[in-house]
Image (cartoon, helix red, strand yellow):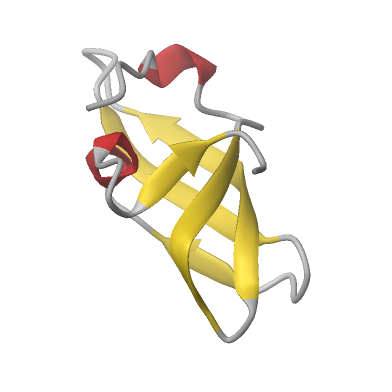
Length: 71
């Protein structure tokens, strides 16, 4: 599993291991924190189509679905 610092999520780049609709590369465009500094909302955007998806940021730790950076 990836170790991800939630404070560095914004504008980070991700590659989907199994692309859907030819969407492979994604960028984290929005991250919201609560009063304790916990992530409450994370939005990723497909680079090719600009489609936005709300995601549980902890899913990005799963290397069977996501790779950090654009591969």
